[in-house]
Length: 213
Ligand code: AMP
Image 1 (cartoon, protein in one colour):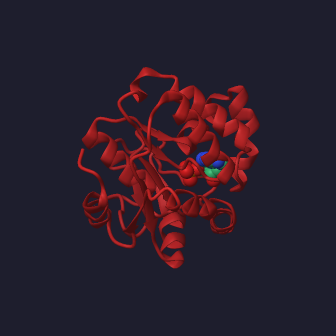
Image 2 (cartoon, helix red, strand yellow):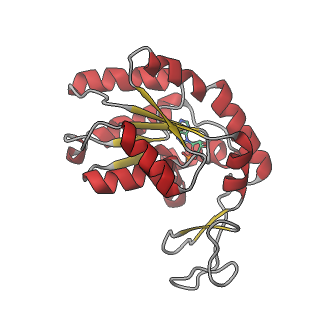
């Protein structure tokens, strides 16, 4: 299954929940890239300036990461892709990879959310750098402002979650990523989900259009 949507549409939240429930790996290229940057690996060094500026990492780099990820045995029973493919060449490369592995795509979930809501969701997003718990300055406040409820660590904002960078990411989405929707529509795989509501409502809307586990 592939989860597609603009930044802030809630891909990560939904994909993690579906993956947990179905016992499938959640494969998010953004998470893989941030971890590579944190560790200072060669891929991390190559990707850093693109990720931190809100641009897209070159196709060959992310395609390489995906090929490597799909060589691990936990992907044979299925997977939930989040944040990949983000361009038509990535979608074509994924098709070739899956043909080689003899694995079909069952569904492409398209999360639809108005742009004003996206901006507010992302610029208010914070997280705990120690345990990863997500927060939001308005919608999901910590008990004490700016620190994690679980371990008291000061919360951080993602480098690319500031307003100027979010605008660039939305622009990239419209100009490059949106083209993968007709690509999968032609294959009859796209399921549209109203993603303007709270996480539970988005989950229920998604569950209603998905093939059963
Ligand atoms: P995300 O966590 O999905 O919002 O991704 C964060 C950032 O990682 C994006 O803004 C891009 O810079 C980079 N990135 C993640 N996935 C891809 C991809 N499939 N293609 C190109 N860049 C990506």
